[in-house]
Image 1 (tube, one colour):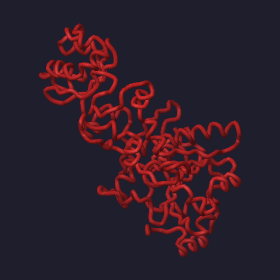
Image 2 (image 1 turned 45 degrees about the vertical axis):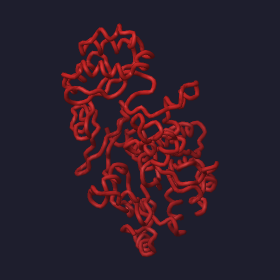
Image 3 (image 1 turned 180 degrees about the horizontal axis):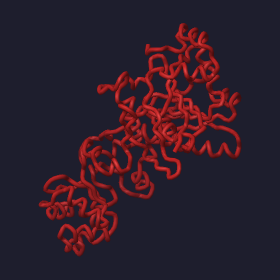
Image 4 (image 1 turned 90 degrees about the vertical axis):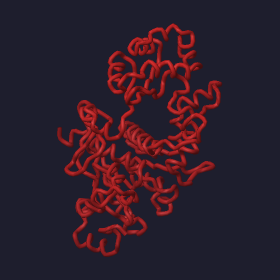
Length: 397
């Protein structure tokens, strides 16, 4: 399949974002064929320095978020830099940025200005809290939103302190929400011919993740509490010990529970009045854990997990990172990308006719500046002049 057959072929994206949520969004768009131009400030995307480890001129953190893009550097604090941006926006479909609300407006590049000049442009802003309201315009960071949105309040061991989830889940989900919003706006533009403003706020995304805790509160349940690996509504649904590797059971109905008990040699548990349905199992969670772990005490964890899932019991071994990367199903699902020396995580979105295409490793700082400006019609003399003014720096400040 050629690049022209990708789902977003013909869509051009100007990416002014940095750090995580915005770059994650634009990497998804680039993987599916969009021509993404990543524009960095003179100091560069700060994640270039978020190492070790490093790969070439940038940290692994940067490499995980910026493939499938062309890169250039531009100083938007200068009038000439802003004029170049406006030239780049001619014929562009999507602008993605995560400046603090008010920054583009200060430069005369707010949504109203851009909408008037580029009526078909989809302008996606990723921010911490949105532009208005009690917290509007304030900076937002993943861990801060995890705290404020309630995620930390329900994460951690029972009786323990609130705990940050061990990955930037709010930033990643905000990036995905931005992709959804952009996709919806592109679809609507086919009908109206008009672009629109798309907003993805970390605070909103954090709140959206609070399932089933918010619904439980909405419908009269007790206040959510930390339960470690245990599910607040379902049992057995947590990590259980075996003779070797621990495994996670996610048993959602009585049929699955019966198959679990039969497979591990304790079918009598299904008739025990403490465990006859999910409600009683939940009320007797500790007794259930003791009974199941006793039955699995001589079992090898990974082999048992394989047997259980084959008979329809949702279950999996608790794997370490390197074990996950080496798993044959990871390779089968094409979840490791290699482009020359670059290695990255593959796209989880699988399209049958127009699959993702990994065309470029993450760009070096300003790598494609001349190529991009030449396509705008700028002469080598003009490019050299802009270099001399520091408008298009060749190296990080």
